[in-house]
Image (cartoon, rainbow, N blue to C red; front, side):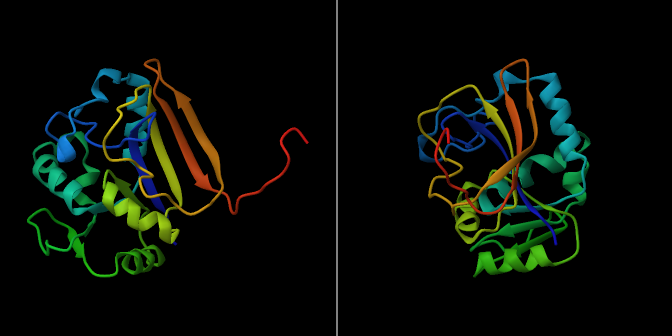
Length: 200
């Protein structure tokens, strides 16, 4: 079974919008595009490159796909895997792209994704795609979060858990703190929530 891994640059207040550049995603009047850039960190960059070098396919929302479709074919030397990975795109309007291999999904997205997870192949990585995530999480389709947490609050913008998620426990399988204050944490699902008495 393939795992579905959510990978995000995220602020302390949960914003995942437009970390990469000023014009990446200005929807909603978001004015802080490129907020992650001042925290570039060689050690965190090395961890990111290690993660990106693993086998993967991509599951993306249409908006993220279109940002990437315009960018990555011209910058493929920085991330070879993004060109060969199958891009599964959730979209009500798009059905094709010159950027291949890509497969467009419409209709019952949770059902499509559940089926994809049962098929052989590499893990499915989700980057950005904030609207798609709000569909995936309530259907218990996320197996792991690989988060880069930045020491900044943005006040507004698209958030990772904007519409909540199902109750679930996670365990930390990897964590690092970069020199610029970025905390990289890999959370894997660890069953149901356990309760008790604090200090007991």
